[in-house]
Image (cartoon, rainbow, N blue to C red; front, top):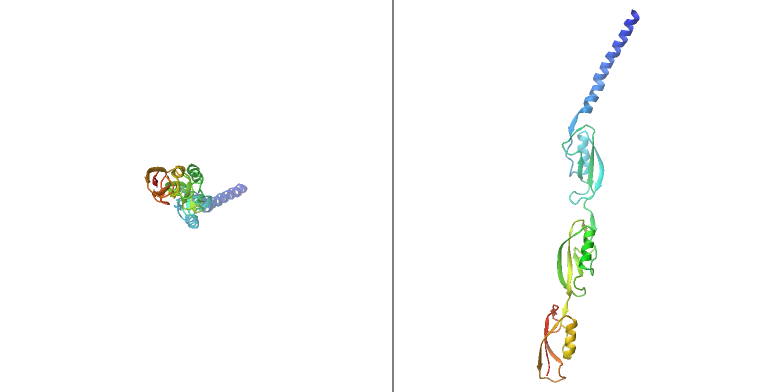
Amino acid sequence: MRRILVYAAIIIAFFVVGLIVANFLLMPLLVGRGEEIAVPNVCNQPLDTAVEMLRAAGLDGVVVERRFDRIIDEGYVIVQDPLPDAQVKKKRIINLTVSLGAETVSVPFLAGIGYEQGLSIISRIGLVVTRVDSVFSDSIGLGKIIGTVPEAETEVSKGDGVVLIVSKGLILRIPNLVGQQLSQAQLILQRMGLVLGAIEEIQGSGTRGTVIIQNPEPDRIVNSGDTVNIMVIK
């Protein structure tokens, strides 16, 4: 009988100890583990600040990705997972995606390249042609690129706009036809894409058919297809 009482006392003692352990150790752990908190919004925050904000809330911030972004500055948080205001357990890891800033590229050198080819190059490197300006050139033929704005080798952000300057053709300057025979003057103008207009014969000293006056005057800038009038010795 006495032995039974001893065993009963031991069992009761273990039970009491178990209740104490459960009440003061296990229950606080279980309650704490089940507590939920709202995830703070750390988007658009510097990484250090974001990590501190999460730590203050009882959470852990971990960088899982770094990528280029045209809007968010370098070193700032782009995206967080879970999202802001989500209810999570304490000590939950919050995944952070951090910006590397805008990706930059160098404007290519396109002078002398055809328009279509230049357009393809601009597109392949991630830039956009926003406008095409056409001007006459001293050295670059019709339809070829003279230059860009910004200039070649300028560092710009991917997605930025570029202006292409395309040649309308070589600048045409009226040649000096004075002293040339009519047939030779006509050939010169034809080769330049100009048109021989009115031919007036006037009295003068010299060989018949020699050009003595022209309009427009020599070195005047003209367009292809413009007309040149001359006076020749009668």
